[in-house]
Image (cartoon, rainbow, N blue to C red):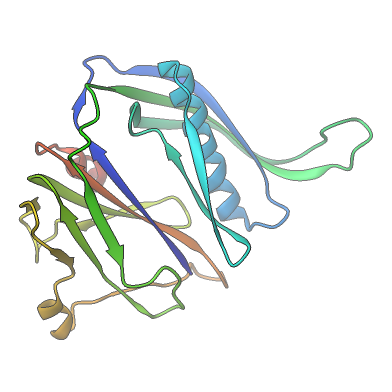
Length: 232
């Protein structure tokens, strides 16, 4: 199991969101179907943000031991997808040219609502996030530490291999998500782990290997995003 860590720093948002239609298309010869779906959705996100905001949006791939180990979109500096609807999705075959061999692809067409981010980045606002490991076998324990240079509110989400989102922090055991400068936030805290409150990674049923994401969001003001995630 590969767990990728994404740390996102957000400031203010523009008033009016923009709704666009975006597509994603991924060849999945070396991927299982769930991984292909997740990557096609991320590609649609990138295309949708670029169309909505008219900016260059880049993606970054992570490579570990010579193998593709994950990808995320550098879109947070410009905007974020706040709502989505899948209009069409299918497995198909695709030929780059009439003479080339057909390859299996996953295709997704989505309606995305994108909200632009206002203001200039604050170079003094930095967040340091560390996992105890990056690669896990099923059943292994995972925890993390978070530090920030400015007062902020922290939210942590787990995005699994099916692209489903699960809130990890704040939670009933750690309801306060305000972080002071220089303070070390441990999730879960060591004292709780010693009492048996642990996060253990697991593959999806029937999968030998999966790729998940831990998304850490730091904001200078509290927002209701986590409530919206829990309602879905």
